[in-house]
Image 1 (cartoon, rainbow, N blue to C red):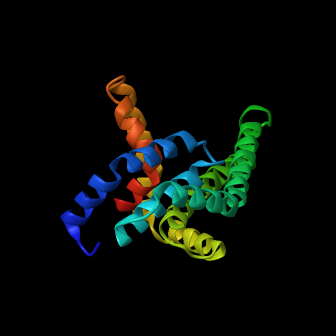
Image 2: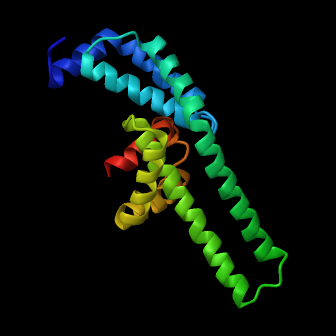
Length: 194
C-alpha cells in the first residue's frame, strides 16, 4: 500500500476497522496499573505504528508478540519505581502521623514529596519513551530522567493534568464515562502531544 494521508487512514480503517476496535478493547482490558498497563499501551501503539507505516499486517499476532515482549522487558523498571514511590509515601505517612515533627521532619517531608513527584515524572516520561521509541531500556531511563529535570513547563502539565481531568470527570458523571474509556489507555500519549 503506497498511499499517504487520508487515503492511507481510510484504507486501514476499512480493512482493519474491527481488528483495531478489538486491540483497543483488549488494551483497555489489559490495563492493570503498573503490572500490564505499560505493556498493553506499548503493544497497542507499536502495532498502530507498524500498520500506519506498512499499510498492512497481522494485527492480533503482532499485538500479542509486542505485549509479551514489553511486559517482560519493562515490568522490572515499573515495579521498582512503584515500590520506591510506595516506600516514600509510607515514610511521609510516618512523618505526618507517627513521628513528632520538627524542623528536620518538615524538611524530610518536603524532600519525600519532591522525590515522589520526580519518580512520577520519570515514570511518565519513561512510559512515553518505551511506547514511542525502541531504545535500550537504560537509554530510555536516562532520557526520562533528563526530561524530568529539563522540561519544567511540561512537568507542570504532567503533574496537574490528572487532577484537572479528575475534577471535570467528577463534575460531569455519568456523561463522562465514555470519555474515560477513551482517555485511560491513551493518557500518557495524550500528554506527550501537549
